[in-house]
Image (cartoon, helix red, strand yellow):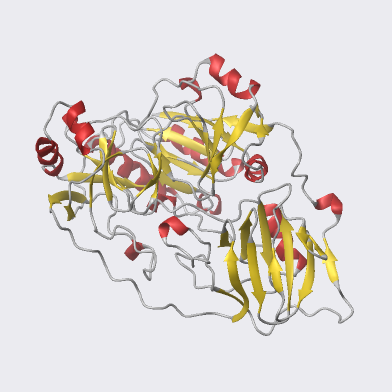
Length: 519
């Protein structure tokens, strides 16, 4: 039972060394004991995220004191004896056609047929969901098939890919980056973002038994749902989404145990000001624009507010609210010096929510995809009424962030701090890192001298936005709000929200430095 800090807003408990049946039983016992202990408001503000051999609590620093006090009282033998766990068996038809099947077979001196036989024989345990919505971490893999993760993760793994990562196997529930070895594929619908409830959105849950059934021709999966209802009245038509266009509100906090990332705006200060300019709640949906190239046709008269990295539109400066007229075309030039810009409308943009939020998570099919021809809708009539002589509103210059600032970003030690040598820990803060062009809402990659943690990979455990992970190639990756909720790379550090916001607004090729914070 090892307790470590995960920055100032999370506590991590490691309760086992291996993800076996005894570890799963202990995890269940700890979770049940925690959930039954008290109904105090302070405890209710904490989120508990289960991992394979770890539990992570997130919340405000003052609330985490209750966690530490509780952990000090928990009997060390709790859950050490496996209890009867209610379970159901789910069979997954699988085509063994993965890109890494031949390499995995050669590595273990087996034939491909032997790999398939050994992989499809066990009744696996679903130990937890994580990484992406509905991704199952499965215990019970034949030890002869244990295979290290890829040194450099793939930038895109197709949904339905059956894979091996270390001593575990799993299924990519949605298309996403990933570093596991691909041995097969399935059409089973692990995650259905259009489901009516959170529980019905996921095929699997922790505690299930799962069996892979070899099938050369698995089905095509469920039918897509029909058109969803349209809310509000059309205000803008997307002529071009440019380099990226999503809708973001307060996001989906509290769903990490299902593998659903929190999402939400990358620059909450800019998004909040866009809403305040139009007297909206700060969490009202805003459009998040990446870099440049967005074009919109205005369909009716209204007010808009624009903040973030954009310097504005012709005749309409950034960090301001202004009137637009039906028939106008809004062309967005490059965002300078930042990356992400935010556009608000009175009352907030209207869209059908998925899992309690309208935030767009393209790789999971959550939220609407905003493509050429899409109509962006808002309330009608407008809830904002300003004097007819008002031409616009501006945010005072003292409130506008300086996106050109070059001060180091504060970072706290992460759960695997001790896995890095003192030289590597010092090097991370001493070096000037370069942002790769492989940066998006999932994560920002850093380029510089490689760091070498020992071990090079760990058992998959919960990952929070702002985490500095180091894969086997030694090049750090900073997780962003759409990133994986569980991962198996050592976590060197955790960026404070303000530091993460500043990093998100840095352009590819930017130089960035870090400074360790402690205490």
